[in-house]
Image (cartoon, rainbow, N blue to C red; front, side, top):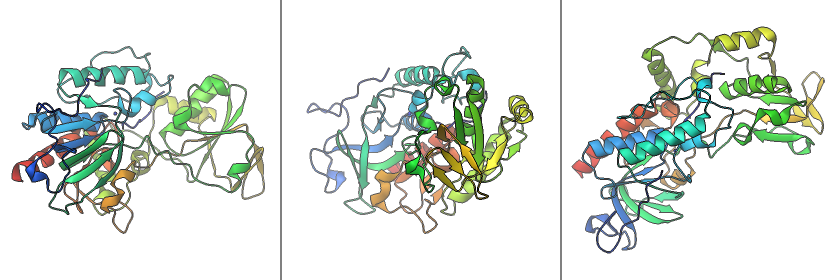
Length: 390
């Protein structure tokens, strides 16, 4: 079953630097008031998913040396980005495609192999072959600017602090599942879970599952649940829009442009599906015809044994599956005050307008397989140029 999946990261051990001067520098006269025990780099890449690895590759192509000039941090235990967390039934043959990382093609793979395993293996080989060691697991806690807009950024992590001239942020969305609130949600006696928490559809066999959400994840799970022997009801806030997908690369560029139209004026980005609709496949056509992909309007409230609609009708449910997407994992950037009055972060390409030291990839139009690789390149070029000009 096709899906339009988001990408948010065998690691090479990467030390933080030592007294002999190997690795990242711990002190630098150009670092302003940065303390001596803070490690210094020119560019810090946060996140080793598709966008982060693409940025790291292009930073190296621009002449910056890994571990000396730039460092990559990743919160995961191993390579693969958000893909490493995908449910086992999501095989490579059921996704629309994984965009190649720069300089290394994915090549032929077994379409029945779980996508999580394929991507983790591919990304791990990429890190080794391209000489891009990743510090993991390291979670960034906050980013501040103690020396003002002309100084270095201070990046606090659970493995010590860094100071950097430029920050390429590629943290994606996987860590921030969105759970919309409806009255009575806490009274439900059945099971509630988000799509990120699903392991296998077979665990819902014989149950009635209410699937909430109008995107690709909802469609994918409805098909899997039906095949696994569960009954389903699909509920959406607005009617789902299925569209004919146009072949060729131009379609991808149109998707990027559609989503980027909001981030250039400082509005929160829409999802790819929210901006373009759901690509209609033959499988989806059959599921629409059979009634599996038939959406109803949302309920008004949740009750202990099901959901109730505005007209008073009641729908019993054993499970509520929230396929309601994700929000950008940017809480660590909050101290910098990057958001506009519209709630979003205004970008010029991938560079944050309010603070050009920050480059966002995996945000807005690049939060998918379509734009992540290109966004990584744009961010690397912008960061490298600023480093040279410093």
